[in-house]
Length: 398
Image 1 (cartoon, rainbow, N blue to C red):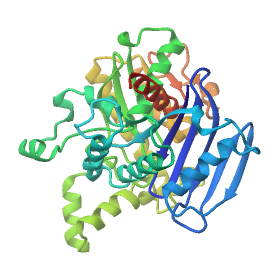
Image 2 (spheres, rainbow, N blue to C red; image 1 turned 135 degrees about the vertical axis):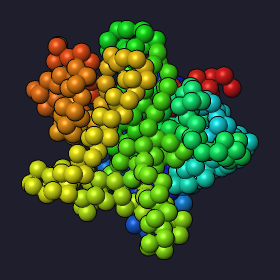
Image 3 (cartoon, helix red, strand yellow; image 1 turned 180 degrees about the vertical axis):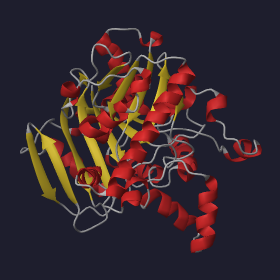
Image 4 (cartoon, rainbow, N blue to C red; image 1 turned 90 degrees about the vertical axis):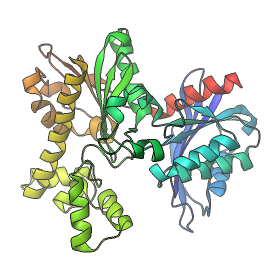
C-alpha cells in the first residue's frame, strides 16, 4: 500500500509518499507561496532534490502539480496515480468531537470546520487540501489525523480550566494540547529502542520547534500536556508567548488600545523568545546572539529553558516518578546547548547529561550518562509515518 501524507498550511503544502510495506519515503517536498505568482516546489525523489518555480493560485493547482511529479519521467516513483491507495491529512485541532482519527466525508469535514475557531491558521487550510484531493483524486479514501486526539486520554482534572464551568459546557473551553502525533511517535519509538512494554514506562516528551509542547506519557497514554485551548498556550515559543497572567492581556489592551485580534496577533507572532530578545524569529540567531553576550537573548533562552524544566518537574510529580525524557522537534533534535541547559536545570532530579553524547544533531541517541537516574534521549520525530499508519489502518476498514 502507498499512502500520500499531506500537511496543508494557509499558503504551503508539505507532502510525503510512503510505501507502507517498507516504510520507505518514495517522494517528499514542500510547495510554498501558494496563491502567488512566485510559488515554487522543493521536490525530493530518487536521491535528488529539485526546486521548481511553478505558479499555484490555490491548493488544487498545487496538489495537481505535486502529483504530476510522482509520474514525471525525470523524478518518477510510480507509474500512475492509481498506485496511491489512500491520503492522510494532518489536522491540528479536533476539539472534543474527535477522539481518534476519522475517515473523511462531508460530515467530518463540516465538523473539522467547526473546530477552526480553536486553530484558525491551520484547520481551514487542511479543509482546502481535502477539497482539492476530492477534485483531483475522486473516490480515494482520505483520513484525518488530529494533533489533539492523543491527548483525549487526559483526565478531566488536568484539562479543565479554573473559570466558570458553564464556559466548558457552552463553548468547549478546556485544554486540548497539540503535537499529539509527535508525542505518540517518539514515546512508542523509545519503547521499541529500549525493548520495554510502554505500559510500564513513565516518559516526558519535549517537542521543541517553532511551536513547542511538553507531554507526560504514563503507560503509553497522555495524562497532561503544556499546550492548552489553542497552540498558543504552554511554554514560551519562538514567536508565541505561552502561558501568561491573564491580566497582562487586559492591561495591555487598555494601555495600547488593542482589539482582541490585535492582541491575539501580538501573542502569536511578536512574543516568545523573539519578543524578549527583539531579534529575528529564528532560534539559531537568538542562541548565537546570546553566546556573543547579548543580554536580552540570554534572558530569552533562560526563560525558555526554565519553563521546560518546570513542566518536566511538574509532570514527574504528576506521574509519581519518571523513567525517560525525550527531546524531539527542530530545536529538540538540533540545538545542543538548549538540551544541555534544560538538563542542567534538572540535575536535582538526578538527570546527568553525557556532554560528548549530546554533541550531535538529528541523531537517534541516548544522551545521558549511565549514572543518570533518568535516561535522556534524542529521537527525531516522524509525524508523517504515524499519519500514514493511521491512514492505512482506517483505509483498510473502509
